[in-house]
Length: 341
Ligand code: RIB
Image (cartoon, rainbow, N blue to C red; front, top):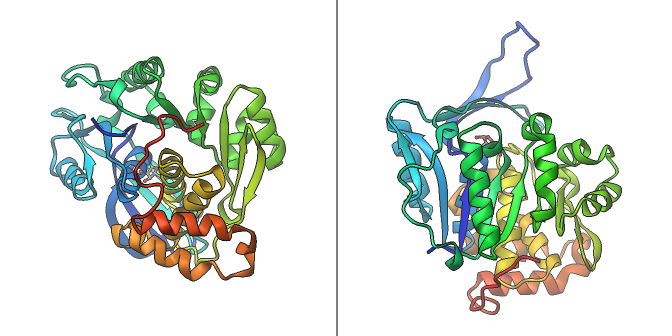
């Protein structure tokens, strides 16, 4: 059994870099266009595997060549795809991502086979042997995928796994009360500021974290993009500064942050060290994409080593040491925590 199971979308991302975003009815020219693995759950699963976690994904692709290619990409990244269904009647999810020079991404999604995830043909999952369940909120948008997601979350909670949720803006707009009802069962909630605002009505990060904890969430990592993140846990709230990188494309940066934080906690790191690892992965992905060479253990250790002498990180030396040591194969590697909190 894997240590982590992620559930949600597996997409082909068509990523187009554009000098400007065209007005409605206008035209945009792309300077660079690439096709790659995407989907919030697939991104997080891929990065978790790069962090050294045994990771499986529950999802659904088409039987088309795109779906087969994405499964091959996930396998090559070390993700177990034995829980991914293949749909003979629907095409694999495709998302068109327009990226402007500030790195901001605007997405147009066709969710295709993802939505048709169903209860048929699952091999039995021994939830009791898994450590953590990560749910991507897109999976809550439509049935039957939503029913499978809720059922998997129930099974995970009943079996004592820790559970994380990345809700997504569109899900919070369309399924706000469902998400609110889930919050008290979430061990780690991973919103952006836009998402937190849809639940709390404030864009003040500290206030949002306080209000979310009042809604029953055990731990919150509020993703603040170029401003780093704020973590709210029982011991208190703290901010983690951003890493200084040239931001080229923020697609998947939040998903990578999720993976670093989850992996860090499961590997026994403090909240500060785990959030620092998450921030580093988010920054590396915003700079160079979800690419094994960039986010693999050695590359991240080298990046941390280079960054640690910047004045921003004066109070974080102990956390840098812990992560670098972990990434190089020493310390914290043996024990797996059963919970995130
Ligand atoms: O979180 C980023 C992901 O959201 C993209 O990879 C895209 O596929 C969309 O699902």
